[in-house]
Length: 116
Length: 118
Image (cartoon, rainbow over all chains, first blue to last red):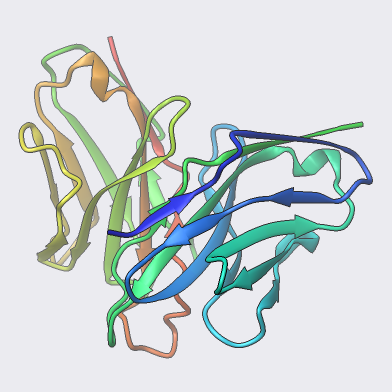
């Protein structure tokens, strides 16, 4: 069975400080890893993904994430947080089996609050 | 290129009525996924469809829920005889056919349909 864990329901950081939102996964197969962000009463916006290649991937709004195969982790990071980064963040995985991908499996989400 | 379009954005139904939620995928996308988000919870997979074909319905409740994606027109998620527990945000996502160069792996989400059952 495929699963994604986001161990923190909430992360609070001060504006200007670095932020990390944690994600670990458990899959049988090759993982495609994603981060999405959701603002109140809105849909999910794609931030970044890891499929193959460099373990450090860069995405929208200055976010980046590091794929760590041995720790099965894909933590989201940003060097300097903004108040406008406050939102709900979802880690997700799709599993590659040959030529098919199938659905996205989501973590429960982490509410990020950046205070001024 | 318009994004994934969902309507209605908000829907209010009384217990026992039917709810129909529509999703038009992005242009060129032939795969549609439906997810449900309950308050204070994450996103729960419901169903994965291609045109005229259900690929994975393992997340669909056994009764009252159905989904279709006809050859022409939007995908529809139908909930019969709604109950208060059906109140949630329902999100649709789409992707291109797998194997194409245009399929970069991520799903593209609509803004959601928020169902309230009175």
